[in-house]
Amino acid sequence: MNEHHTTRFAVAVDAALREAGWQPGRWDIKQAEHWADTLRAHESPGGHRHAVFPAAVEAWAEFGALRITPQGPGREIAPASLHLDPLAGLHLARTLGDLGRALDTELTPLGEEGDAQAVLAIDTKGRVYSLDHTGDWYLGPDVDQALSTLVTGSRPTRLATD
Image 1: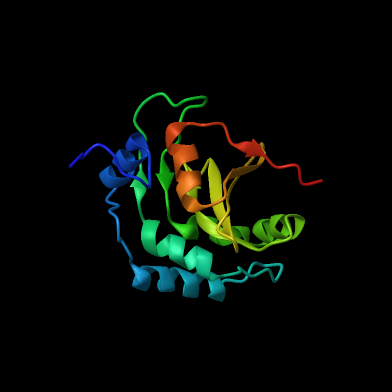
Image 2 (image 1 turned 135 degrees about the vertical axis):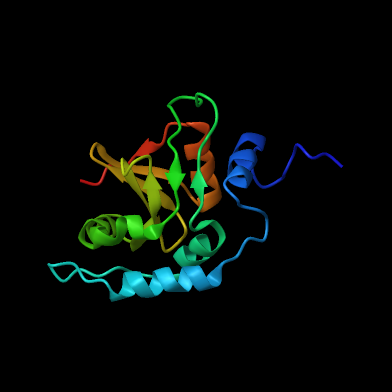
C-alpha cells in the first residue's frame, strides 16, 4: 500500500491538509450549521444579507476551521496560509452580493488567506473565489481545486467583472 499517494489531492496538498487536521471523511455538520445560522442572522448596515446554500455548508463541514500552512516556495506565487473560517467574511455581505450578481450566482464566505489579505468565497455550484484589494480571482470549479491552487502557489485567474 503506497502511503504517498491519494487519488483526491496531490501529495503536497494532501500533506498540508493532514497537517492542518483534515482527514478523509471529516464532517463537522454541527459547526457548519452554527456558521450557517450566524451568517443568516447577520445584516449589514445597508440591509445586505448572506446567502447560505448546500455547497457552502458541505465545504464548511469538511474543511471548516482548518488552518493550512503550505510548505515550500510555490509554483508561480508564494502560497498563503489559509484559515477556513467563513466568519472572516461576515462583514462582506454587500461585496459578496455584488460579485454574486456580476457572476450570476450567489456567494458566501469560506475563509481567508494570510492575515486577512484576501477573503475566500464559494458560490452555489461550489466554485471558489478570492477577493483582495487588487481584485477578484477565480480559484477553481470546486473546493478541492481551489485548495490545490492555493496550497501549491499556482496563479489564479483574474475575474473580469465589468
